[in-house]
Image 1: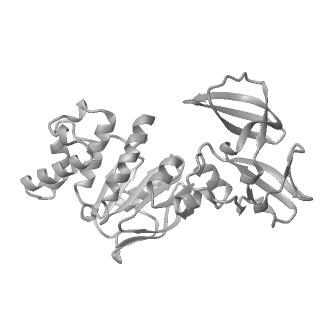
Image 2: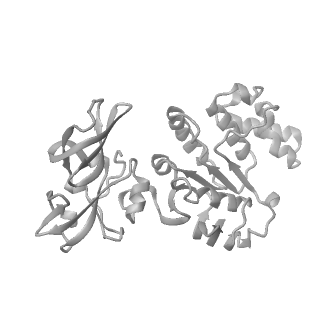
Image 3: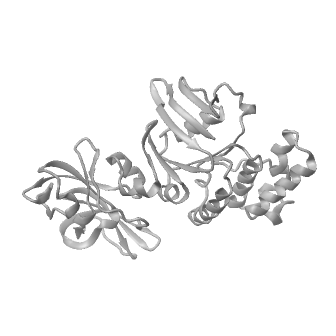
Amino acid sequence: MSLLVQNLGIWVDGVAHLSDISLEFQQGRLYTILGQTLSGKTTLLRTIAGLQSPQKGTLTLHGQDFLELPVWKRRVAMVYQQFINYPHLDVLANVAFPLLRAGVPRAEARQRAREILGKIGLANFENRRPSTLSGGQQQRVALARALVKRAEILLLDEPLVNLDYKLREQLRDEFQNIFAGQDDAIVIYTTTDPDEAIQLGHELIVMDEGAVIQQGKPLEVFNAPAMIRCAEIIYNPPMNIFNGAIQRGEILLQGGVRLPVPWHMGHLPEGTYRFGLSTADISIGGNIGAEVELSEISGSQTILHLRGAIGSFIVYEAGVYHYSMGSTVQVGLDPGRIFTFAVDGKLISAPAATAGQER
């Protein structure tokens, strides 16, 4: 079974919410769609669910026109950002509700609901009301209500975005086990979090301004972003981009900074390029000066926003340090980790893949 999306388009007041989207979603696979706010992720899910009508293109499932199928006949379940539960019903009744509404006998509906609640760690919460649960537990209830339907297509629209960081990490790990049992379904999960997208999905789709800009295995996309815009989206923080050129066997960045050309760029001709480095590949301590524009503490890391002759960029430093705005630091760039892009932003050369590299 596959859901085939062909040339899907939606425009509102001349602005493309979806622009000629063509994708194939296969049964038994989890697809993560990564994109910033207004990239078109939710619009695509709403169109698949039948909540929004496209002005162009087709959707087919089992070779049949999915757009002509009424919403109530589509075997689609959707989980939203908000914890949408029925406050007057207990947890078991919340999960059993869609089955009862579909005509499933009460005993069977409640048994299937209990099985799902056990699977997602809420077996002891059947008689609780949603208002007495934590945010993570409420989102589990919403997920259970979607899973119990045994839908052909399961859509999850940023289901963890409203939870705190620790809870997001916990549920992200749990979701991997939960979705592993959905062999009969197409699972599509949207997120703005690159780590979430890479960790969860069999296949990663990167969207921007209503268009798909790259698709592939998560680590393949991470190790070789097809264009600068994709690198900015999939790296967290966004990949640092510097203007420069290759001249006489050296990388010449703006401000006169020179670096040796690494082996993976040895085949490139002289000329003007744009160079990318992740925050992990710029270190404190080196021969390049920069001014501190902003210093932030994030857990056990210090995030520095710097400006120097080479431009503006971000550096992560392990440990907690205090820097004054306007102070000067020295940094070093790792030429062996440089990505090379053409002036138009397309990837030309990438360093060797480092699967599982920390970002």
